[in-house]
Structures are given as C-alpha cells and as structure tokens.
Length: 322
Image (cartoon, rainbow, N blue to C red):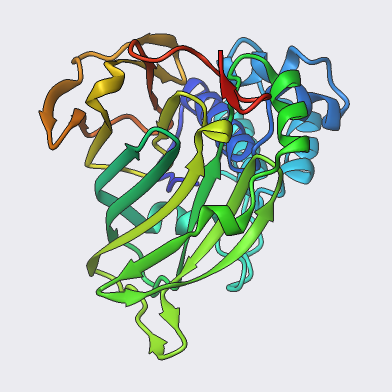
C-alpha cells in the first residue's frame, strides 16, 4: 500500500502489516469474524493481529493474501516484517502486472482535499463526495476505486445480514454518477454484494480519455442515493490514502431536530470522541453540521452518528413509524 523507504523497525513493520490487513479487509467488506472463518482461524485472531496483540506469522500472511486478494500487499508487509527482524533488506517481489493496479494506485495518489456531504430529505440520503487528487507517481492514473457500504443495524451483524438478504442494495436505487473536469466518468463494478459495492471510476467516457498525469491535480466528484431503510444513522470516513484535509457536512431537515456526535478510531486506539465538535447552523429549513480535520492519520476512521429528536424511531422492517 504505502511506499517504504529505508529500514524499518520490527515495531513499525508489524504496525504496517496490521494496517494493511485491516485496509484490505475493509476494502473487501468483511467483518473480522467472517474473515477469520474464511481463513480457518479462531474468530478473535484477526482482532489480535489488527490490534498488534499478536505478531504476524507466515501462515497468516499467506492465508490473508489469498483470501483478500491484496495484490501481494499483505505478503510484501510480511517480507518487510521478517527483514526487520533479521536486520536485512526486504526480499524482492515480482513486479505486478500493469493491468492490476492496487487500490487507488497506492502511494501514487495524495488526496489534497476530501469533502463529503450527506443530505437527508426525510426518506432518502444523497451522498456527494468531492476529492482533489494529486498524482505523485510516475505513471498516468486511469481509474480510482471507491467503496459504498451500508449497515442499517451497526453492532448487530446477524440482523443486518438478514435485512440485506431480503432488501439488497441495488445499482438502480444508487443512481451513481461521477464527473471529472466537467466530464462524465464511466464506472465499472468490481464487487457487488447485498450491502457493499466496490467500483472503479474511470478517467474516460464514450467521448474520450482524460487520465491524471504525474504531477497533476484534479477534482473528481461522485454521488449516489440510499433510502433510510438501508442506510442507518451513521456516516464513516476512512483514511485509506495520504490525505491533507478531510471535511464532512451533514444536512438534515431542521424540523426533525437532529443531534450529531462523532468518534475517531485509529490503528492504535479504540473509538474516542472527535477532538473538535461539529459546528452547526441552519439554512433554508435545514440544520447543517460541519466538521473537518487536517492531515488525518492514515487508516484513521472518523464516524459521525445522529438521532432525530423530533421523530419516533422508524421500523425499517415494517416500513412505517412506531
């Protein structure tokens, strides 16, 4: 995932291994328990690896690489870890095929500004993401990977799984659109699951191509919609690429009397309150909550949650209020 220049300590190599496993597990949309089951490990073992309580092993690295299809990223971290322990240079890896770019080109992209806005009209959530991308690599960038993940019942995986088996997220309802430099971007589905989508946004359309060349920066924007019977009252931003500024806006009908709070989670700490509170103001009948941070840590997760004090709980299974 990240460029690794110079020698690493055993501790930093282990942290990189844990972060890389967590990153690719998230990209594939797998809970820790499900990944452990697929790999044939005790359910708690993935948690121990990602938290650093258990050290990397060759067996775990091989199984994780195979299960998650990480393009040798996890295996590379394992080799780096072994090299750090031995005090030698990391072993060489075969050059990846040019057609198999890792997630968002890995360290070739820096996100200069990540601006996300969620609008809710009482029934439908509309998500709009704007990112200013800079190509710091040596090759033109021709596509960018995005993820759409929903969870109506966070903390209740069985209930959520049952809900999405009955009510899967569909491409039609998402109505995904994407633009770059005023041009529509084609997109290609990479993974299509009931509650999780992974999509390549391509720097091209039927009229031509507009790759992001080395040294250039460009804004891209994409948007999609999800009904509140499938979204859930939370919005999480995960920092998967080096990011200089992250900003989030939530806009709700003021009549719902929304209350918003947030937490921050890193690879080395459990969820803690955001260091600064969201700022709110009202505009055209909406209550808008804004929050931002500079140079967020790689692999950090910022989660905003809310409740509507002016409306009773919605029973999504019945499709009515109670």
